Length: 521
Image (tube, rainbow, N blue to C red; front, side, top):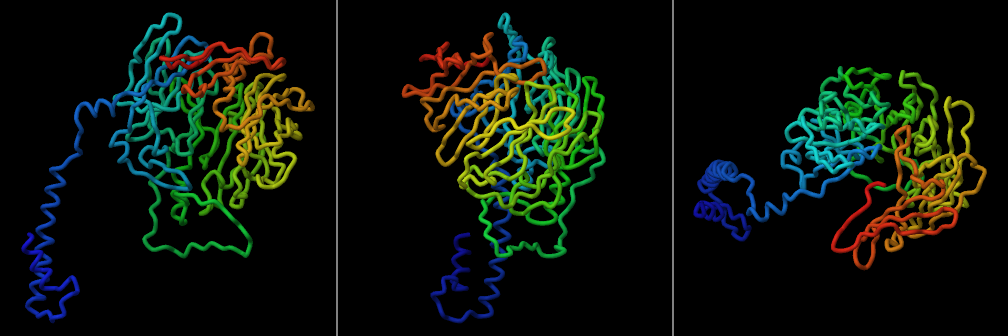
């Protein structure tokens, strides 16, 4: 082969240094020689590829790479069972080789109708906390890919999904029997990342791949026209994103995989559809199980922003598919200011109040959504109770951007807010039953100051199956846990904090050589 290459190089003067003419004979030889080289190279390459599978390192290196991670844990609401979820160290090659669609900022698996890059668990065990009895769970499929776990209110059952090569299934764990069974075949859709959720002790709501969905649309070989985008002379600074829609065929593909059917399933596997098939973005049951908070995307879509900024209609439904009220129809959000912490105008961040039956809450910007603008207040929170008539009730104004709320009762809730520019994070105490009272600052700190992080409040599950603040019997003492960053390393801790006196008592701190953290109380 080396000789052939040299002759070919001399005859054709590839280096450009020779100026002698090339004869017809030498030109013909060169052509033949080129074909011979190509013909010889193909079988050699194929033979090498066929004879060279993925190589494996030594047993010692393999043992380190494949060493199982520390299991993740979930305590049931009654604190009777501790679920251990085994986690693989790395995804398998077959998982990484699955096809992937990149649409509107999302990476989807057309094979499973779910996200393409998840880190599922590979097994589960149960520990009965009364006597530390470890139970192996029976009935799991071979090589399970477990995700989206959620306990029922009474801890008797756990729902979870299992991803197969054909799709995503819904399974149920019976904690007393330590057995699992499949409830729904590979028809669960997770393209919008909406996990199945309990409605009550015997019913689950989830998004289903429409039974009548046809094959995915194919892009036309010849475009029907150009993609036109206009700027009419206005300043429109914007962030850039990857994996956006880029053509009408992308839009059709997005609709195909995001179109789902809201469905109820009972523990016997009986299915009941709710409403029509549509591009659902969120379906969240209310405490009490009668209402659903439903969000649906609709056109026009955008080639500039991700799906989370597409037009979305937010509504309240009953579980009988009755549309009670449209809360807001958010337009396309292509011109949100680029300053970090900027948000859309109008209602956003819809959620149910965890400590009350069927009360929806949302946030609205008071600064035009622009974090760079000077403003006394950034956000206003509102609530609206069932039957969802009349005007919403103002809850609290925030000087920083809303960052979440931990509900406790009508007398206690903790509201978090933040500001990116200063890395400032604030936690305030409010009384939801008396919104006319001013909020009281509990913590006001920099989130970069990890050594002085007070920790996060510990919650319990209330009678409606929702997480609320865990308090002592006096109703004004809460419990905080954190990682306990220090010059010695992380030392997880548990504190008790009196909200009236602001006195803190340390109940536990992990000490070397052990690393221990609080899971529940």
